Length: 96
Image 1 (cartoon, rainbow, N blue to C red):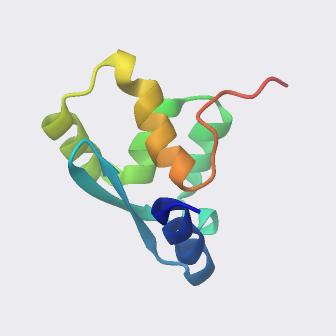
Image 2: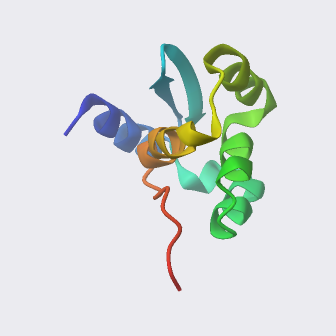
C-alpha cells in the first residue's frame, strides 16, 4: 500500500483531511466521502469533473490550483485522477 493510499484510509477512518500533492503544491481534502459537501457528489454523479473538483477543493484551493499550476484542459484527467483517486472515486465517467 502506498503512503497516499494508507493516509487516505486513515483519514477516512478518523474523519480527517488527507493531504494531496499535485505538481509541487499540497492541498487538503476530506478523507471521508461522508464529509463532502453535497455539491461534490452531485457534480461527480452528473459527470462534471471540473465542478466536482472545484467543490472538493473549495474556492481558496481551487484558485491556488489554477494560479500556481496553470493547468490546461489536457491536464484534467491527471488532476481528476490525483484528487478523486486519492479518496477512492474514479475519474472515468461510468456507463449506465
